Length: 383
Image 1 (spheres, rainbow, N blue to C red):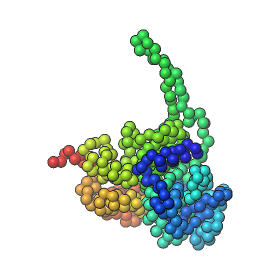
Image 2: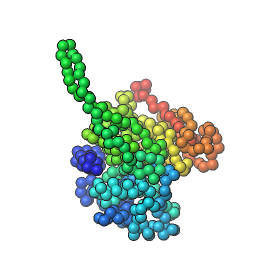
Image 3: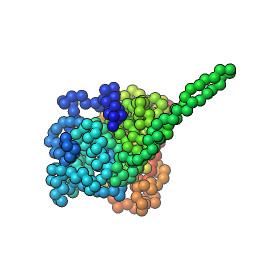
Image 4: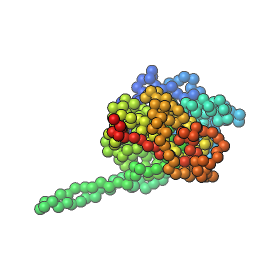
């Protein structure tokens, strides 16, 4: 945990664009409910009532794992306000997240299953609408990327030697001279995808979280608005210099650092620099349509927090997944393939009957279970 603490401290001290809170007056408002970790390690659900403090959030996949839900009708909510069971009845991922939060010196953790009353429709509606802000103002989001369900946990057994660089001594001949040096070889796989990268709701959490700590099977990864690192490469690296273009990370910059986005190119195509935030949106949506949703009707809701901030920061009018000010380009979408992750039973085509209305047919959101792509014009084609 010492390395993670160093990453956090360096980010809070040096990264002015990472939304660091430095005083009690500017600390974020806590969500309606949080898990409070007491000095003895015990935990309970706390109603915050306007309190301000730093807090962490958890991003995970339910999968086929244990389901611990906070419900009012069963009396569990009142029970959890007194004490949360930290035994095997709690999913392993939840228990590990509490351990990490405590070890890093934080007192509050937000987990949707425990901090939203799951059988209260009004509370569900209100709290789900706030999820974008919850992740936006979180000090750090813990991503459970080691498995596809809540019983996978955060910690996995692995060979410690795989995390250490292998230094190989090499000799190079240059004319009559010999150069002896060392080459450092590591097995760090920075492009490793996890089950979280296939889930629709998780996209919003990945984009809006200012600081991300991802527990993968091969290493622990750090990412923030201004840098990235992992156990095998612990020194912070800037995401803007040599890293390959990634629409998800670019979207994070667009929404968390709009002033930076307006004055820097987020695409390798220089002609797009004047409209980069719009093209980043379309690129993000294309990737989003390849993700899975457990509930079809969540398709627009799962990116509503992103759309709200996009409209606010860039003066845009949101229209069911598109932007009124850029509607001509937004309408230039087409289906590229069927998304097999979306639903096991179909649909087979865009015209297949579907029982629920999601969006008008001119919006990409109406393409049920389909992956879509956008045409983004190069401005040098126009006068």
